[in-house]
Image (cartoon, rainbow, N blue to C red; front, side, top):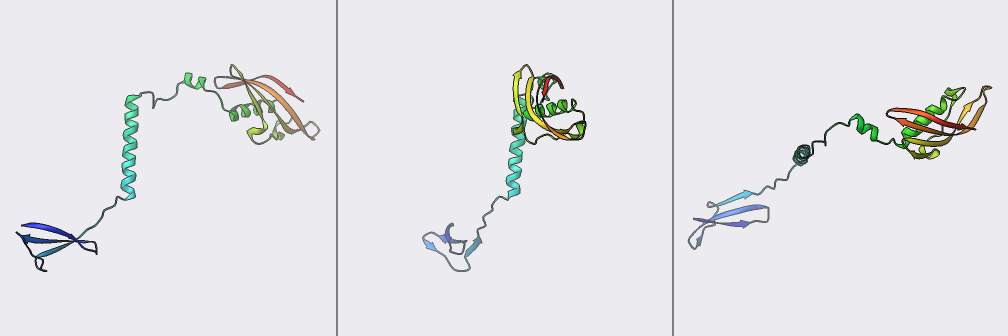
Length: 162
């Protein structure tokens, strides 16, 4: 007995049995099956992506042992500071030179600071600040400092305030 498959318009599949050259298609001998399409859910897709990511990281760890290693003190010493770090320490060192450091108002944004890398962990920073003098009057002071980074410490090499 062989089966012939017929597609119907309604999305069902009709299977009718036939013997030899004769085809039997009466209601008693035909079967109807609904065809359901199963789409992967987003949870399954995300789960598979997570598994692929974990396997990729494990592969990277075993092929490159330094991938997950923590930076050493020597690695940290070789890192160059970013402009915000240089600007922040310059501001702190300039404020130490003021008579009323708590009144200092620095400009906002890195664009108000001229930062030059002088090499050998030395930086020149030029900007301005507003602060009170000994009489309480607010004055704008332009400054230029040269600072040096030694490990995690910063020191003032020179300062010019006018």
